[in-house]
Image (cartoon, rainbow over all chains, first blue to last red; front, side, top):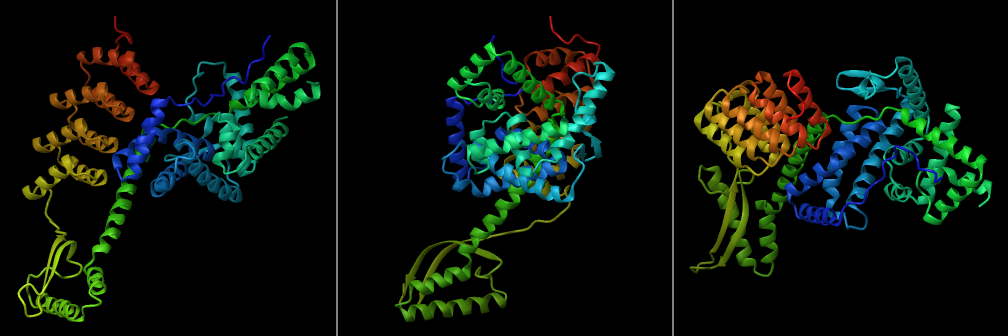
Length: 206
Length: 307
């Protein structure tokens, strides 16, 4: 019997060579001032950027701000991108730093993270997410909600960096090497950070 | 590998962070060690449990709004950058450069300076000479001739860029022509967005509606196309608009546009829409758009699949 890896963690697939060369051409064109090329880059990456920001910050408004700030920063600094890492890593480095700043500010304010801030006000996270299992057993659904709230609570008590590494690894499925690159640190440091985060979550949910 | 070593690796094994020999070593060990196998299952259950946290997926509308806001910010940023760049060609800078260039030719320099003062005097006194800082900007100096006809004269040939402002009501034909031109062909998406915002209020007019239809079909920027589509909302029953909406639903590469097209087509759905929706529901790659197609079909009491 061969053991399986964790179900549900989506791996990061390498882009096919043609897509990579297409990206390179777009980046070079955008660096030359081609607006349409930059817009295409935005369209390629913005959904995942917004998803990361939304899941980390749990606030539509903060996620929108992070999105804006990240792409404006990318636009202003595109000339300094030297293809030393993938554009995805470079862009995520910008986004994660912006989100870290948000989280740091928030950890001072100690906000309730079990709600989602939307344009229509604060909503329970579970109400905000379309439940694919709406026909499931109500009692089971209640337990799932309760557990989800406890996890949210536990996640909100992690340090901003631990929270970030855990999100990138556990929910986004990125490799620790890539996470280290994004956070301008080593793979080993990212690994230690993830270990601490997992231990704290284990203790909180025990 | 000992049990103790395996325990330290279980987490990294489940996170797929071990290299091949390390993975194999863990797998070989747990196959023959029930205690470590139980530990592995316990850890797997713990990590799987953490996934009970709801994952948030940004809605198509939120993505479209963010893109729209970003394009506007980029437009503003670009406009500021361009204005900053023009400073290089500001007349005072040109004079400074000329002065520096003529450093070893004092007579010519004095002549140029005198011309500057005289030029300023001429403008203040109602002349039309363009060298008035703030009104026109020198884009290019094509030639400077010293003493072309004798008498210590200097002749400078240059091109100027002058900004003009046209004001008027949107229904003023001159304003309307500019707006239609800007919506269809102006390079900057931010300007096109602002233009569509004005035009869409007057979509009852045929020319304007045609412009909005042109933008929906041809603009490269999804935010601009979406704005034009908004302007056509009230005319969703018009035959040409319906055809355009079907083209959007079947051809537009932006899911937000396709969802909007479904909504507008459903305002007054007819049976000819069923085939289109069934076709899209089968071919559509985007889960959300596909789901919306299926919902629309169910609302029309039609089969989700075509036969």
